[in-house]
Image (cartoon, rainbow, N blue to C red; front, side, top):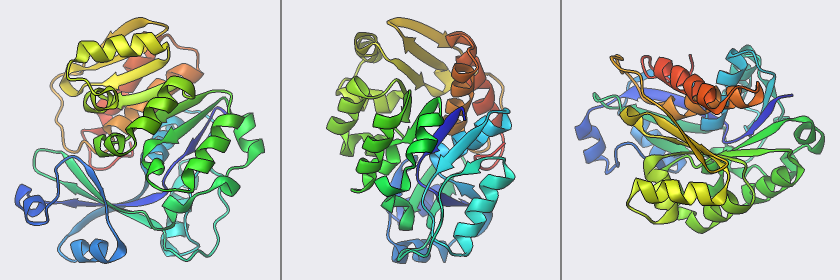
Length: 308
C-alpha cells in the first residue's frame, strides 16, 4: 500500500449561511470549533442541509489519492450506527481500504457542520463523537509497516488517547507526513507540534498562518529560514499567493491558478496535500508535486464539498 491516513472519521454536513449567522452564534470565520452533541443538534435545527459526505481532513486527502489511482487506506474510528455505516460505504465507494473494524461504541459517529458563507469561506463546528477516541489498539502494525507513507491529521491531537496512536504509528512507519490542520489546533498544541516537526515528521503541510503561529514569528521570511534549518520537506499553501515547498534546504514555488470561480474552500488544503503526496509516492519532482497539489485544490474550490 502506498499511503495510510490516520484521522478523524467525520461525516460532513454542508450548509450555506450568512455572515450574520456566524456572528449571532459567536463563531469565528474560517476556523474549526469543537462542540458537544447538544450544541451540534441546536445549530443543526437552524440550518438547511445542502449535502452529507464521509469527511475528515486526512480522509479527504486519501480519497483524492485514490481518485488519482493510488493504492491507499484509512484508519478512523466510527460507531456501528447508521452514520458509521454510511461513512464506511463512502470510503469503499472511492476504492479506499477502510482499515478499522467498527463496533458498538458509547459515543455516536463524529459529525462536522461545515458552514459556507457567501465569500466561499468555511467555518467548521465539529462534534467528534467516537472519532476522537482512536487509540493505539486501533493501529495495526502490519498495515502501517507495509505502507510507504503514514499521513497523520493534526486535528486528532485534540484528544488524549490519539497521542498514543500517533506515537505507535510514527514508530512503525517508514515515512511520516502530517497536516497541522488548523490555526487554533496549532495554538493549542504548539510545543507538541514543534517537537514533532523537528524530530518525527518527514513531510509537513501547513498554511501561512499555521506555520507562523508554530514558530511564533510574524515574518514569512523567518518561517522560510526556520523550514530550511530543520531540513524537512515542509509544504506551505498561501491562497492566492500560491504554494511553496522547502526540501533539503531548497525553496520551490508554484503560483496559484487565476480566473477560478471559487464556490467553496472546504477541501482546498486536503486536496492540495493529496496532489503533493501523489507526486512524492510516484517519484515526481518537488516542482511537479507542487503543481499536482495546485491542480487538485483548484478543482475542488470550484464545487461544493471536499470530494472531486
